[in-house]
Amino acid sequence: MIKKNGQMDLIDSPDHTAYSAPVKEEEFYNFKELAKDEAPDLNYLNTRLSPKAIIYPQSEIMFEYSLDESAEDHHIMKEVDNSYSPQAVIGVRPCDAKAFLLVRLNFDTPEYKDPYWIRAYESTTLVGLACDSPCSSCFCTTAGCGPYHEEGLDILLVDADNHFLAKVLTEKGEKLIKAAGWDTAADEAEAGKKIETGKQAAEAKISAFVNTDRLPEIDTVELYKAPFWEDVSFSCINCGTCTFVCPTCWCFDIQDENHGKSGVRMRNWDSCMFPLFTVHGTGHNPRGTQLHRVRQRFMHKLKYYVDKYDVGIQCVGCGRCVRSCPVNIDIRRVCELMNNYGTEKDSCAA
Ligand code: SF4
Ligand code: SF4
Image 1 (cartoon, protein in one colour):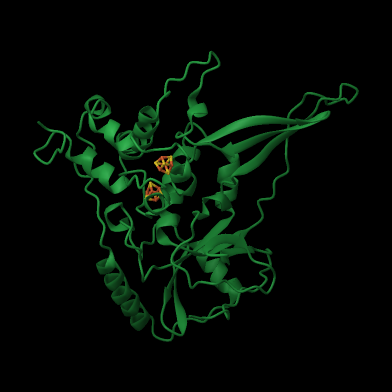
Image 2 (image 1 turned 60 degrees about the horizontal axis):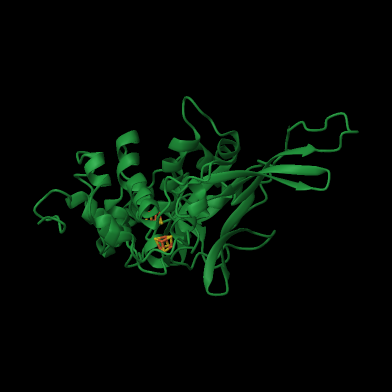
């Protein structure tokens, strides 16, 4: 049990854990590292950008090199000593925590391991905050998640009026609770009952849904050739906002940046919605139109990912892309079109 309203004790633990939490910047909240003695502000609905940058920075230096031929190690890539000291993210919403697990399927596989993402992920403790006031654009309960979902979290915090109840879910969570010295609930059964009641009330407030049941069985090529893509993509301006705000989008580009006789190799977020993303060295672009790019984004999230990993869609229903798209392209509508394709409900059927 921990106190509310700026009195959450974030004790300087022996391993010097750094704490990140939502901070209000003008009208929006974003995750930021807290200064010493700064308390987390948990009076927020959700952040505009997801917390994915805490593990997977928007720009990250991977290597450095020298172009100075008088130096012994010129033109040799040297790994940069990035810091992966322990960090805890306080107040992450359950959808954003689950998103890390979806992304992990890309960065941490038996064949390929991304050391940067894995080191950052493993040094992070995720302290979730259950959602009691989901937005009208949230559809997490039909996207494999929910306002009190626990997957991907180390601790789940639940608002209990003048304090938070903390449900410990992993060893990492246990360690943090001990280091922070938070109180143990006087009556665990009572605390469990409160959490269950809150969960049911929060789930009942979710008013948006998606149907995904037919996505695995629909023929990929048929879906790719469906006539609705022209209508879906018509208004897209390829701004990339939907992919940048999304906790489950992971595309990146690697570039070398030279400054005089030294340089760095960087990884930067990229977006399948940008025309340059797929341009070949020859100048040919296999996704040269907005239809190609919009189709790729939705086919990847709602069909290719479903087929490849068999764990549902590559979306946790946070609703950020719905709220942020300047031309109101709505993944819930596209999912409906895709899921209904070839049935009586298919709006493209003659
Ligand atoms: S946010 Fe909307 S307009 Fe911008 S790239 Fe995404 S779908 Fe297109
Ligand atoms: S696709 Fe949209 S709703 Fe789904 S996780 Fe990404 S931003 Fe959230």
